[in-house]
Length: 262
Figure (cartoon, rainbow, N blue to C red):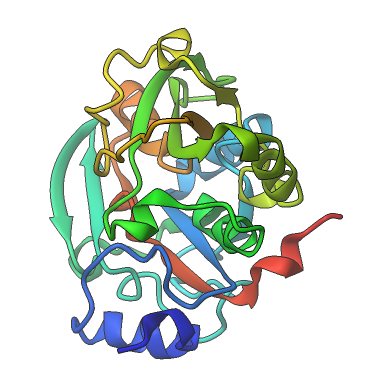
């Protein structure tokens, strides 16, 4: 299957049928991909405020009506209970399940948030002839819990998660320029170079995803990551938070360029 050139509704249909369970980087080239967070209605305002205060890791693309799994702005007719390849379920800060649909967990008091994902700006990087290692090597992007504190809001607090891409040193400025055009999908990097400055002890041991090879002449570049809410779930310990599994995103109908600001 030519997943890179398929339409989002076609790929979502395969996912809903259980025929496609793999990381979504590189699928539906040019279309927005999104992170997922689902919480009970009584925590929805707290999370909305948390996202508003932390737009780099948690840029909001869509919020569902209470009890409604359809993301009407990002994909009319889609169903967030089934249309993501893999989900994680956190209860009181503990990861209790990883599943391919969340039908058994869905209740009529849940609110879902779709957050911008850095997979969306990878098309711009590739168009600028900037290599994206995890696409080249066909593995999940490496993600790390940092020492960068998020701005707390209500129940939610904790450390920022970042994703990393090795960039040839002569292309770093171009990578910053390419991704800065997309603030709704994390925008410019939050750190370039020495991982220890942001609390990463071993670049070869990501907290989520798979390690990427950093070649001679390349520099690790770090972007804020929409997996941050999973770090927040572990520290804030809400009674329930449902997320996507890292790297297994929701594919939206709009194009990446629809979010470009320059």
